Every structure is written in C-alpha cells, then in structure tokens.
Length: 521
Image (cartoon, helix red, strand yellow):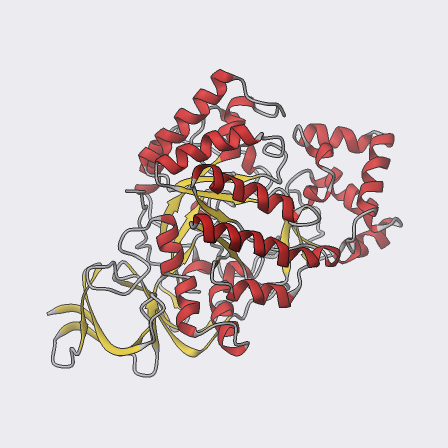
C-alpha cells in the first residue's frame, strides 16, 4: 500500500515533453510509481481529473535570507502558495555566511535592519547546520555572496584586495562550496562590488568552475551600460568555462530599451560557443529597487556614512542632483515600498512627497535617503512589457521571483513586490494567454532548467525515485497580487506537496514545514 496516489493526472513532467495521462504513487517523500494504478491501494487517494500535475517550482533567484524572512516567516507562505518548493538564496552578492568578521553582514543592510540580530555561526558549514536544525516551508539551498566575503575582509573600505586578502577570499569560497554552497553570487552594481577588478572576478570564477558550481551575476548596469555589462559577465565564461547565470535580466528606462537585441545577440553567440549560459527574470514591468542605487556610484561608494556626508555637503549634493536630472527617469512616479525608519511614507510617490515638501522630486529623493538611510525600497515602472515577454519566452531564460517568502497577511508598514506572491502562476498564465511558449515549456522554465542549472539532486522533474515535490493546478492559474495589495495567494493551485507532504490545498496553507536544507553534492 502506498502513502498517496494522485489518480487521473495530466502530468507535465518538467522535461518539456507533451503532457500525458497517468497516476502517481508516493511513498513517504519519494515518487515510487507512475502509470495505471487504478487498482492499487493507498492510505490517501486524490483524484486530480482535469488538473495538471507538475514538479514543484524551483526559485533560483530568491532573497528570503537577506530579507530575513527565513527567520521571521520560516513557513515562507508567499512561496508555498504559488507552488515553489525549492528556493535558492544567497543571491546578488549577499549571503548570511561565511562571516569572516562581524562586518560581513553589512552587505544585507540595504534590505534588512540588523539591529538586535544575534547569530550563532561563522563558517558556511556552521550556517547550514544551524538552518538544518530549523524547519522551513520549502527546501532551501544557498550560494555564497561575493560582497559578504569581501566586506568580511575590508569592512566599508572601497579598495582592491591585497594578496593575503585574496588568498583568504579564495580559501573561504572553496571551503563554503565544499560545505554545500551551490556556487557564488555577485552584485556588481552595488557599492562594495562596483570596484572589483576583472582579475579578482576571474580568480573566483576559476574556483567556481573547478568546483562544478554556479556563478550568478547581477550586472553592473541594467541601463545605458547594459551591453558592456553583459559582455563582462560573458567574458567569465569565455575565459574560465564557468556555469553562468545572469540575474533578473532586464533593460531599465525607455531610452535604453533599444539595447536589448544586441545584448541578447551577445548571450546567444556566446552560448553557441561555450554553452552553460542562462538568465532569469520575473514577469513584471516594474522593479523593486534600493533607493540609494539611483545615485551616482561615487556618491555611495564607501557605505552609508560616506553617502550621507556627500548629501550634507552643498556642492556634492548639487552634483548628485545634476546627475539625477540627467537621467531619463520619472522620479515623481517612484513609489515608496518600505523603509526601516517609521516615516509614514509607504505607498506614497516621490511626487506626492515633493508636493508636501515644496520641492522637486529629485530633492524629495535625496531627502528620503537622508531621513531613511540606505534601507529604503521603492517601486518604479520602467520596463517594456513586450521585451519582458520576449525574455520570458527565450530558450535560455528561467523564471524566478527575485523576492522572498512573506506572510499572506497584509502588512500595513511595508509593501513587497507582487512577484514574491505570484511570479510562477502569473508566468504560467501569460505563457498560454499571450502565446509566449507552450505550457510544457513554461513548466520546464520553472522546474528542470533551474534545477539542472544549480545542480539539484532528484528534483525538478516527475520521475520514479525523485522527491515528491509536486504542484497540482488547473487552467485558471494566475496571480492575484498587485503592487497596491501584494499580500494575496494566487488562484488555480489545488495542491502543493513538499517532500511527499501536502502543505497547501485549494489556497489554504497548513503551516506545515517540510522543506529541507539542501547541499551541493
């Protein structure tokens, strides 16, 4: 007798093959049989006639660590409710380990206030052991953050590493991957990685390649320098053969939209020569951005204190404002999503704040940074939805939230991007409704492709002896989250299984945490 049988399933197995009709038997945490099981017995038989059964969705670009939600909301409700069963954290250069000094965690300060935080790990091995002693709503794997490594050595200094520091950096990366990290992430647009040299990048990329791990790159620019930034990332593949993922590929601001075709041509040409190149994105036309990154890089290099010092200097502030005004950005439409300070501005636009302060929107932006520091997140609608759809359907793309697992209960103090609640169902709906790709290919982009890319074992496809991470959904699947009220579960998801256990049914979460901490093997 089996633990569970899903009978009459329309199986989309994650490989891209056409859907087929069969039954699925689960024993404990594994899929043990697929076929005609109408005469078999099980402790629980679930009839899924007319529904699709897919592998659990894999979110390869997740930030539940740096947003601290793996601790504040370990059931990771907004991920589970949209069918995500595995999340890869430690992205965009920031991870929670290894901690080469207490200053290592300064890299996450732009996303979460660290005041009062107590940690009981230093190495990546210790970090995974601590996580393994906890319970999570989804399976968790992590990359190592480049900025976390670097700031553990140089703190807030903006400078090149000396030879001894490079040795420590490389040794720490090697030890972290050996302990179970799936690779290395970088956030080259952020202050403490903006000055990283090509040689330094290449040294770590070689280690990642030798360890058969993943290199995830947040480009230096998603605007006017997009082409050069893509070329820089691709050069890592050309010189080392490293397995590369470009994070949340997009083109910001209308004046730069014309750059996408050339950037894609570069990616495609390099893939033909070297392979092992992919990118991820989310199915939305607006971004969720740290406010200080709108400033010129020289203004925030050196950390928060240096940035605030620049803003208080009349001459420097004048230069910063001139830079802002030179950009093709409608600052008045930028909306405040969250601040670490209790400023009562969430949901307001910079234009509204400017009117209240009797200044222009550029000054309102600078005033916000002065009052709220580096921990301000904003929404800005600056992407071309047609280009987003082109990228969604591209053969080398994967779909990811670039978000975190939040509670579904409405938070009056802050707004999260709706991608945290609806990226996967929104994409599946868009894929079919807008003829972006077949439903089978769409499922592949959120299951086997990211699972293979990161090196997950026995996850990402429906096959005998694979773990029973499964999503059952119907043809009405779609997101209900929006930027004004993101805290909503999607529609159309009937069941979510994590390691063989039902954790969600017909939109109701059971609060069961069956996720496991995964390690690179």
